Image (cartoon, rainbow, N blue to C red; front, side, top):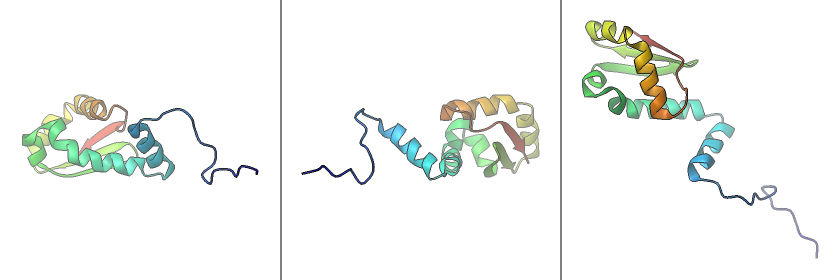
Length: 105
């Protein structure tokens, strides 16, 4: 009797971590950027601390630009002077470059 091929194609013999599997799935469905944006919103308090998170009214990523809407003008000015540091903190948290520029509004 002839063996029928597996419906999902050839099976891979090496083991794959769950993280790699999830990353591949998100990328294949083209939703990896939206997932990163949702993760950033949930991790913002951890990355920036509660003082800044409480004054943040909106977070959005558009074309690798993180747009942070703040309710405090002095904080906006202070963070504008620390853009590179904030960008490094965000990218370090994710382990990859999800943000290439930051805009504080």
